[in-house]
Every structure is written in structure tokens, then in C-alpha cells.
Length: 491
Ligand SMILES: NC(=O)C1=CN([C@@H]2O[C@H](COP(=O)(O)OP(=O)(O)OC[C@H]3O[C@@H](n4cnc5c(N)ncnc54)[C@H](OP(=O)(O)O)[C@@H]3O)[C@@H](O)[C@H]2O)[C@H](O)CC1
Ligand SMILES: [K+]
Image: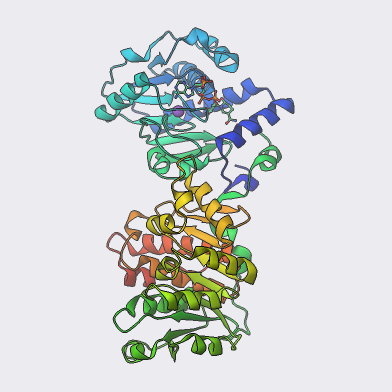
């Protein structure tokens, strides 16, 4: 694949516009379909060499067209092929009709397909053009194929997955492998689409990268290319203040562990110095658990105000175990002009007072990152969460725009979005990352990056990725402690 397209994500609408631009620039659309269908046939032969029969299911649009090309190519290569269509193939139009007439195989109605052991299904029912729930006849076939556990190779998207949102429309195939074209679609990386797509292969059917780049928005799969310009090697002359001073604010004596975990991770994550700001009544318990991390008594807004005079303290984490209430709100509002990770209780404290926070962030021009999981997101952005028409990416973008902060919308498909609309979707997190204290670890890594001078978006994207890698390294039995020990170096 072309380098410029490496991590790019597109929506089906953008893809349709790219196709149109390609046609307008003189590229023959049927030759694109031929490349797509040939790529599917090659993948089928490569991935399923022992298949006794390829069952190609073709739909009423161009996804079906890709299927007819693939079926013909598979038959030409000597494979057994059975061809089924959803709807009357004589109603196909344009390139789809051309593809059907270039295929010598007889086609029968999809309702007659009985899965047999040894079959491999090539799913070309619907791709980017799925506009509503799968029709009943397609849902029936999905159920029969699911029940028979035969493997599915999906063309562009597993039929039933919405290419924009990743949601299931009525029912969806569960693919072992998906061959898509030009660039992954957002529905390939958002859940449940990601899980149902299986292994994703992106095939370049020959649309020039400049046409793709001209239509694509600033949406990427998260990875080191996003932040590498800030990660750089440590300079030879560096010292601990140059690597940045991170402050983490602790809750009261009964709930100090979460903030200490974030603080410990801050050091591992690369901050030069980390200080835990503790209320007086929790000083003793915090002191008894700390070694490399410094401790400072911060009980009141006045204490915090005094600390803020020290401009070497670059970044703050407020929220883990802090407690919900006025103190959290007062502290957060004082920190909006600095680099701030507002996590957990820090966010929840603003459920009834979010406008004050959002206005302060907008007016202060700091680097603020908020890290809601689904429940926190719904509490802070109820109108966005309730809008079923929006994808998770669009929800994160709307929340970033409302709050003026970088939003890390957590989950198996964490989305990081900036107020500008720039966004990444993270795909490296294993399911066992959802463990107690995992969020405190993430907050600490983001804080470490902010302390080192990363802008908020890159700080958050890099942290989400390192957090995912830590989960992979720590393995299935990961705990917050082993996660903290498994954070990989910045790359
Ligand atoms: N550049 C590329 O990536 C290329 C991709 N190709 C392939 O083309 C498809 C997209 O083709 P398109 O025709 O736009 O869409 P589909 O084939 O997915 O579906 C459209 C047809 O299906 C009807 N439709 C949609 N949803 C439903 C539904 N739920 N039930 C019944 N029918 C449905 C729709 O009819 P309408 O009534 O809604 O108009 C269309 O008839 C892409 O996925 C790739 O596989 C090209 O081959 C090469 C270039
Ligand atoms: K499909």
C-alpha cells in the first residue's frame, strides 16, 4: 500500500466520493472492480487451499459485482464454485451487470443455499453501500452459515456491518478474513465491526493516493506515526526537569491507591519527576508507600495556587480516587490553563456543572485531556451519547468540540478526538485491558507525555497505544500493577 495511505481511515461516503473522482479523472471503474474481484479470488485460494467448494454469495450492487468477478476467477483456477444471488441478477446495473455477464457460472437464488462441510463462503452481498438492515432472506443465510461454522471471506465488509459506524444492521456474517480496497473503513475498526471482520487485508486496486488523500478527513488508525515527532530520543544533556515534572493529586486517606498508581506510571511513562499532591490527612499513608515519587501537602485551593507558581510543574493528573465534589471542581478549574488530564472523579464532578468547565477550558487555552469510559461519557455528554445516528468516532468528535478538550473515549475501540475534528481509533488493546486500575495507568501515561511537552492530542494517542501494548505484554492475567511494569518505551 502507498505510504501516505498507511493508517488512513475513510467513511463509505468518502469512499464513494473517491470512486467518483477516480471515474472523473478517466480511470475505468470496471477495471477497479476487476482488480477488486481478482484480489478476493487470490485471497480465497491463498487462505483456504483445502476448501472443497467456494460458495460465492452476490448482492444487488457493486459488492455483488466483485463477487461475480471473484467467482469467475476461482472457477478459472480450477476450484469448485457455487454461485448464489440475492435478488434477480438480471436487475444488476452498470459494472455489476458487466461483471455478471463476464461470469460463466449459473446462478441460483440465495434461499436455496444449504451450507455443507468443506464450503468456504465468499460474502459479496453488501459492502459500503449497505443502507438499511439486511433483508430477511440475507439474515436467514447469515444464521445458517453461522450455525454451520463454515469460514467466511468477506468482500469489503462482512455483510450486515455498517461501514461508517461498525454497528450490525439486523445481522452480520462473522468473517475469518476481510479483503477491503484502498483504505480501511471506520466500520472495520469500531466495535463490533472490528471483531466481525476477522483479519483485515487492504488491497490497492489502483486509485491514485492523491485522490484518496484529497477526500479523506483527518482520521487515522492510532500508531507511532501519529506522535513520533515528539517522542525523539532523550538528548545527551537532559536532566530530570527537562523530561518534565508531573503532579498527581491524591484523594483522602481511604482512597489514595489510584493516584499513587497514576504517579508511579508517570515515572515509568517518562516524566522526569513526579510529585503526589496529598491532602494533609492522607500524608502519612501516602508517605509510607512512596519512594521515587515526591510528596507535597496540597489540602486547599490556596495550597494549589501557591504550587502553581512553580512553572516547572508542567502537567497534572486530577481524578483517580480524588472524590467527586466541589474540591475537584475548584482544583480542575485552576488547572485548565496548564496541561491537565481530567479523569474519573475529576470529570464526574462536573456532571451538573459542565458549562463552567467547558468555558474555562476554552478561555484558558491549556492542554486538557478528558478520559471518559462509556458511562462517564453518557453522564457528561448525554445528548451526544443518546444520538444513535452517530458513530463512536463522531461522538468523540462532538464531545471534543463541545468541551474544547481532547477526548479519549475509552473502550475496546478507544477513540481520541481533538476539538478540530482530528481523530484516531486505537486497535491494539487486548480485551483483558479492562481491569481494575487500568484507567489510572492510562491517566498516568498521558500525564507523563504532557509533562514531556507533547501536545494534548499526541500525548493521549501515544498513551492509549502504549497502554494497549502494555496489555499485550502483561498477558491475560494482567493487573494494574503488571500493566504498569509492562509499558514499552516510547517509539
Ligand atoms: N473503490 C472501491 O472501493 C471499489 C469498491 N467496489 C465495490 O463496490 C461496493 C460498493 O458498491 P455499492 O453498489 O455502492 O454498494 P453495495 O453493493 O454494498 O450495495 C448497494 C446495493 O444494495 C442495495 N441495498 C443496500 N442496502 C440494502 C439492504 N439493506 N437491503 C436490500 N438492498 C440494499 C442498494 O439498493 P438501494 O435500493 O439502497 O439503492 C444497492 O442496489 C464496495 O463495497 C466494493 O465491494 C468496486 O467493485 C470497485 C471499486
Ligand atoms: K460483503
